[in-house]
Length: 213
Length: 213
DNA sequence: TGCATCTTTGCATACCATGCAACTTATGTC
DNA sequence: GACATAAGTTGCATGGTATGCAAAGATGCA
Image: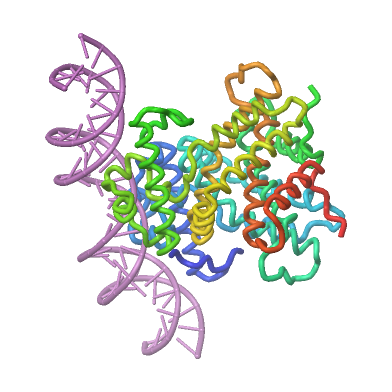
């Protein structure tokens, strides 16, 4: 079943620091090996050896081999959730989401090389790409709840989750980010990523009108 | 690698009819067994035995065990693509997509019981749900291309796929459908599915404004 | 230091997934 | 209808994936 994720933020204990380090080492080993040899040719044994742990320990951190390629940053969801909750009150829900996601993407640029490799790996095998897309869903559910909180103020999300509007907003924003990344990685020379990102959200806010051209 | 899907429509040859029957039998066996015992407890051997074929044959039809739970109707994508292309010219792209998807969902109601079980199974194990969402991506890419064709009239989609707008539209519409189904299955008694579906597309067309209430 | 807790590891086991060769079943032709 | 061919199914062998369990090794805390 995997180990619990303990604290999302930077905890102080030696144990938790070691655990984060091990997880990061496994993740990085998986991505680098996959970028070099192709994801299908990378065995769990190779990943574990590169990260300096046993195969059994690999499965203490990831539920499946593919998870090591797909799950990049486990705390990203929590950070976006907080960003949505802390956004200025005069931002529309859509704009709050846009800003939270933009901040997260900017953060991702810090690990530039690794993220680039990661994108390459996912794009190279559709199987993993699909898995990656699906993996965002949990984060989207979190975001939907954050939006619901933002809208209603109170903490009682009721028995059966956020309403239709927050769910839709989170799902659509997720789709928007994926579309931006896809399109940008196919037209990297023509436009900066942030331009694509903002054009996408502008289209959303306008109700996706048919292009005039 | 899986067998090729031959023709999407109803072909006449005995071979192809048998193949579709076998695929359907495997798919149905997988879903029913999973609904009864939980997806994790269903082995490929059990699915194959229920469908009356060997384990080896199972893997001739599906690339992995999970695919049998996830891939319900392999031709749905092709049908929606055609529906988008054949839609009346005065419909906006968003409306054309909405109608294509509504038609497909109405079709799904024919197999009501099986689709219901399918939804249950996916919902019961997040792992499969994520996989299911990812599986829609190929269909979305197809839809994006159809929209691009619809907008530009010509057949030359260029070297690097549809533009930003068609991609975004397809991705957002996919997110809208998933959201509708999620929300509806959580509030089944309160509203008819089609009402939820239309409310979602109305919100999209309005640019996802913050709710006034 | 010494004890409680958590983590890693090896081992055993079962299932998943693919290549290959032999066998069976459709299709089209004579 | 019988034949040659192409297509699909099956069993076997093989290797990777994934989990439970118990022993050994770290860490946290009094």
